[in-house]
Image (tube, rainbow, N blue to C red):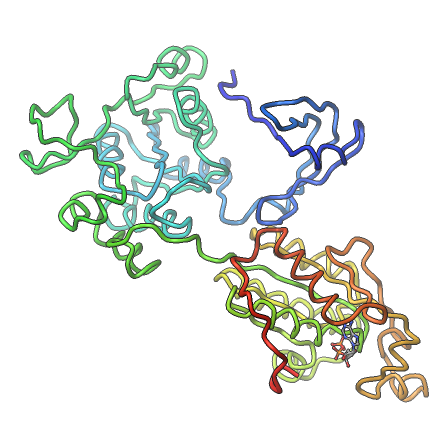
Length: 461
Ligand code: ADP
């Protein structure tokens, strides 16, 4: 049984580009490739178009921060738990979530906290929300009775959504999902035991009672002062209620993510890191365009440029231009790029990266960690590059004085499907940089761009 229809809808423009029987790529909002759908059916659904068909997953596309059901079931088996409770917190992990988990643990052998990877949480950005469950699990639950997991997607609201969550939790080894009985319906009761083999723990919504000075519920407490234990802006504005509903470690997390969080409450999502990976022959314009893009983005995103020449002078000092050493160099750059991007930095790499297979590897490694990756092909005719000969290297290579020079005495495999292709011996630097910025923007990777165009400074040049 499947309680909620999960549909893929696209706008009319996207739908117009789809054809029955043809494959289409599936991307996350962040621009990571997930897989492909072979379109079988298109149907109108609420002003959008629903797309149906067989889906093929790119195995490497499962973000590393997601836990697989298999891994969590293995952990449960290792603990030797038989009665396994499960709780899926909807937002930042509050004292109410902890309360529910502990109610369950009073009888269950263990508790799985199943955090959804996505949530419409206005008070905590994703990283802080996920971390909040981790700090409470570490500080306030016995380690041998708790497992923490991150599951894909977001919770679906309503009674059918609760049933879906229970079904997903079952895949993670949960036999006793916590279900909040808010009186909206009891699908879980109707289906859980009979059809799903689940024994839900039906708890009343948690409330805070100042008179009892504890978290309780309408089922247990007679006082009129009771307030819902949900954490919202009003709670964060009131230090007494904040303390009652959030552990100090969680308050600290919120404050660190935004210094005024507990006073002012709403903050923007942090900027997402990304990797903008240039490839192209020497002199094709990688460094020049990296600098131009960085200039255009100044103020919008924290940025780092990993320039090929600079990397070879430091990080990859001593490496040759053999295929093996070139691959090591590219993987080192990619490793540093991922490490930075994970912390919200936009990373621009400018190295020749001549081998298609190696470029595919570093793209897959980024995708596996959910890091948006855009390949930019800086293209120019060899004749133009020889005429440009910025570093005087083509002259030497053509005279036979330089072995392993890409494009002359060493191979270059041009990308077949780059995310952006710029033709630097036809278009201007401004035009090429604009196309690259537009690609980042269309993937939603840039905040509001600064409106003034900075002029070229000596340092940039
Ligand atoms: P790479 O980093 O790919 O080795 P560089 O950026 O060092 O290449 O050199 C590219 C040269 O080409 C620079 O001198 C730059 O001014 C010139 N150039 C001319 N048109 C363009 C363009 N549209 N994009 C990038 N560079 C261009």
